Image (cartoon, rainbow, N blue to C red; front, side, top):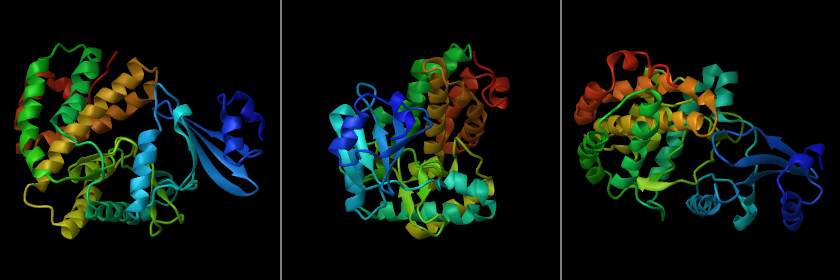
Length: 331
């Protein structure tokens, strides 16, 4: 057991002992935007990942539920070795350190191949019937878009028409809700930092992580998450090629481009709100640097005619200079 155990959460040693992993070496992994913490575990040469998702802020039961379903469908979610959900502990398979984003940074010539693998994994997921998860319904979409007016607009010093904002999204998303039936499993945070290259190459199986918030929704949503990535630049050319790859294989219908733009604007507006909240509420200002990238993608999505009601709201409520500066400076 490493010296780092002195600073680790209460109950960790007892959980590992009960799981048969007593005496394991423990290495904390730097955290991200949630209350979850992760640790690399190694006992007698066997690696594992330990997730601590403590209540009341976190609940590992949805993660366990989705993981079980994904594995049953032949998708590559991590195997669960042991869990004590009430205390927030999950011991699971270690997918290694080859995150897609890190691998591309080290192997830029392999970017296209890595994204092709990620698209193909989505195609496989979308061949399966939708999982036993809640629907991505209008209430869910609107809870997310309201984060923009709840967090970003006050931070930017904007007094906006909140009721018209909700009405604009309701009008724009209404047709999409009809088209997304019967729906597919939407992982909701499917991007280059949440995809693991299990064999250390883009041709290897794609390991899925961070899927605990899965819903049943539109197949375009995870494509948007992947190809309009908030955390890394994806060129317009690569985005177009990967969309073409998906559409050629899935034949998603004539309205798919409109739905992709709708969900792009919806997700990006949500992310601007979330990144502002991470700063204002949670004291994590590093996410502010990502807002211009997200905002640029949102502006492109708003140009689609399917977004006309939402675009009109932005024209009336968000000054042009703020929009041109990628969201501007907020305080």
